Image (cartoon, rainbow, N blue to C red):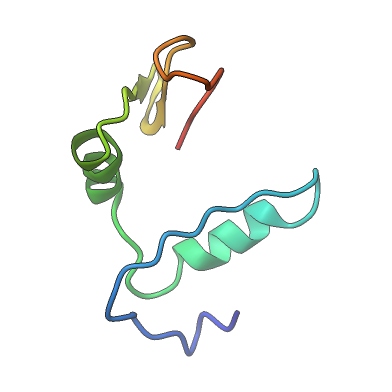
Length: 81
């Protein structure tokens, strides 16, 4: 993806990345996060907590990292954004 020429889409896009260890997920997420139109932490938090109703709270020592406590999200051992 060429982030230098990327334009803001008319509709928002949520990218979910999964893959094996060292497959480039973090590198791609950094590129996507630096592209035009990237949402802020505040709007992202509001989406996950207020809109989707996920039981997330800020991690102690890093308020930008949201996570669920074990047992709070049915069928999921750990969920973080």
